[in-house]
Amino acid sequence: MSWNLENTYAELPEIFYRKQNPEIAPAPKLLIFNEELAAELGLEENSAEIFAGSKLPPGSKPISQAYAGYQFGHFAMLGDGRAVLLGEQITPGGERFDIQLKGSGRTAFSRNGDGYAALLPMLREYIISEAMFYLGIPTTRSLAVVLTGEDVVREKILPGAVLTRVASSHIRVGTFNYIAGAAEETRILADYTIRRHFPETDKYVLFLREVAKRQADLIAKWQCVGFIHGVMNTDNMAISGETIDYGPCAFMDSYDPSAVFSSIDIEGRYAYENQPKIGAWNLLRFAESILPLLHENENEAVEIAKAEIENYWQNYKIFWQNEMRNKLGIEDEGAADAELFAEMLDLMAAHKLDYTNTFRAFPAVPEPLAEWQKKWQARFTCQPKKNPAVIPRNYRVEEALSAADNGDFSVMHKLLAVLRKPYENSDEYSKPPPENFCNYKTFCGT
Ligand code: AMP
Ligand code: MG
Image (tube, rainbow, N blue to C red):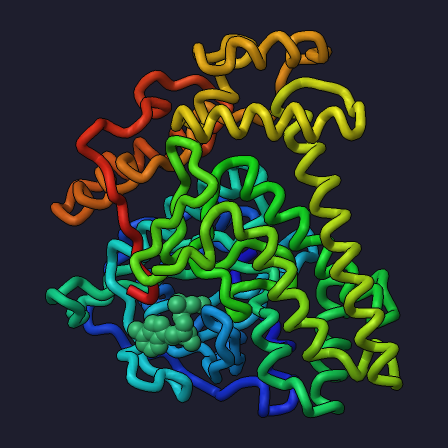
């Protein structure tokens, strides 16, 4: 089997997208190809031309998608400024996945951007999205990274690249923000999204509830591995509940609730500890956008939306506490658990303990947790689970990228191999960063 593309998104009214061919790359060169993902998709293809956008796969009706987004709280019209959706691959198992090229040139939504992507940020997305997948966290995936042969002008001249992103869809909260106010189109988009992601649901309130529930689950999982998304604008929140848009994201090393890595997040809006709150804020923007679908009476609709956000919080708490119980190997004892978690996390923050390694070492604990350990041990009933030994630590990712920058991909391949088995011990890859690796910063839209 190979390409088996459908283009159902391109059958929506034209307001949702623009037809868009990717640019022809002067010298495509395939740098990395995800064989395992390709097999799941039923793809034998690994043509550099196709993944650079120079040649269309059979059945493709390429488009760029329209969307808006609340960026750091402010509404903006956006859209795929550097991405083209080739179509939806139907897998041998009958599943549907968007195949999208990122960095394939200007589109109708590019505004002042050049439509390109530089190589290292695309490799970074590849590494971190793969790591997320193997940590069991819902995520878009990366199928290929291709050099285009075109230079990209940033602060320096950089090699241009295209990343092929695979997602269960690219419908965002921002897609609904974009169409908000147009009653008919909102309904069309909601119906389409429900068919695609929530076929068991026939009511819009349940649709909102399910979207919120998936976000609660996702963000609880982020918190429990120390993942900081970095730019939780509504255009970067997928309705499917997958992590999307690996720009300024990072995993934290030592535990710090206020951790922020993004160079532009001056006020820490998207800090680690704020992620659950931002999830709720974004879901409110989603609920507002579909308000007329929730109830014909606006006041009633607002009440429904509020109740669903309440539901989100309850779900979030349940999911997070369950994950934490797994991490600690304890049974549910209600309110006492919250206290146990809070006490541990406070000590971890005060003593800047390594988030990943502290959990991983259980039942051994570092000295500052010695007193706390007594309380925990009285509760401890089963082997702690879901504490990874390996996460994509920033210094390791940087090391892999800088070797790749010098043409050596072996460091990255070695890192990827370890990240595919995050629960296997690895002395080498579980070391916290060296002392001189500090003030790590990440960047958007690079
Ligand atoms: P992001 O920060 O990647 O979520 O992108 C925010 C918006 O900027 C989206 O509409 C992107 O399509 C757009 N964008 C980012 N980089 C570029 C670029 N190099 N050229 C055109 N548009 C871009
Ligand atoms: Mg984005």
